[in-house]
Image (cartoon, rainbow over all chains, first blue to last red; front, side, top):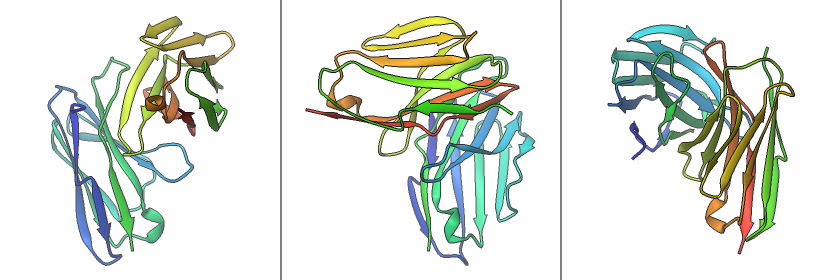
Amino acid sequence: ETGVTQTPRHLVMGMTNKKSLKCEQHLGHNAMYWYKQSAKKPLELMFVYNFKEQTENNSVPSRFSPECPNSSHLFLHLHTLQPEDSALYLCASRTDGNYGYTFGSGTRLTVV
Amino acid sequence: KNEVEQSPQNLTAQEGEFITINCSYSVGISALHWLQQHPGGGIVSLFMLSSGKKKHGRLIATINIQEKHSSLHITASHPRDSAVYICASFGNEKLTFGTGTRLTIIP
């Protein structure tokens, strides 16, 4: 148990589907992050939420839609994805002023 | 723009060997992270350091702020150490990641 829980662990979806990824932490952290990890590439920051407010959108296509209803939960809503969106999506959290991050186990997404 | 480079990209060694993975970054940072990623995908934080050296069991991490360089060492390596090791620099409230080093320890 890493402290950051992601569901589902694996997801296969068609290009016309709509699905959501979920991230949950009860560590008391105020900042939550979505990262994308494609094969042979470094992790890329997608979105940052701080106290439920989005503070960064790293030029992510609108087919990815984040939602942060409270400081403990973060969602990534997916619709009309492309095969090149297949990747590992990782959630992380931390507390402002603290350099330490806690990562989840990731959701491996395959778009067919 | 900060860039993080790791070497080697892949490393295969025999059980028991001493392992070194290197990380260089291009701009001043607040902290340097070493992360471990197993085949399932989850990432575990091994070390976070701003100066000097840290040790945890068989793992040692060092950083040289002047040279913008960090190393991760594994002593008496074991097959269970096989994983991808990722260096990430923290600066301007952001993490910048290296591409990772895939380590395979052969029994």
